[in-house]
Image (tube, rainbow, N blue to C red; front, side, top):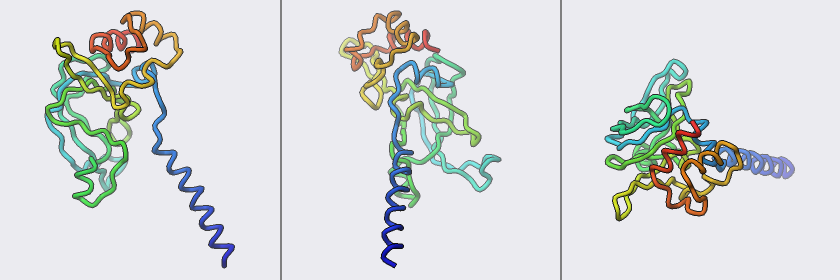
Length: 195
């Protein structure tokens, strides 16, 4: 009996280790984010709504958050003024008594973003590239210049060694040491090189 208990706990530890790795985010540089994204746009989140969709791949239903954006500029692909993102924000999930995804990207109505999305999946949903790495808050400096910063404070954006990233950084005259001070115009220039 004791041997079974020990084996059970050993198996549980191994399973936990593998399941925990599924929630880890792989660091991505800007070239990886942009080249793998289907859509890159700038816009203001107008609304969000938790709803259940019933795609053919999941007829029982899937909980999603439906976002509506006022798209001001499309940098890659065809901008989506509306899209469904898999999952539910933590606060809503807790109210509903359902699980939520750790690291779930939540867009706040009234906030301006530059977003790199991948999708749609077979469920018809979209996701930001690398979770917080593909979502950039648009903020304005004291001079009114638009600046962008992702959920990782732009860490790793310029760590890659790819030829595309090097070319994009040269086109924007970007100093990788100033990644935290990334202007929207430099971001846009690099996206145009990388897409």
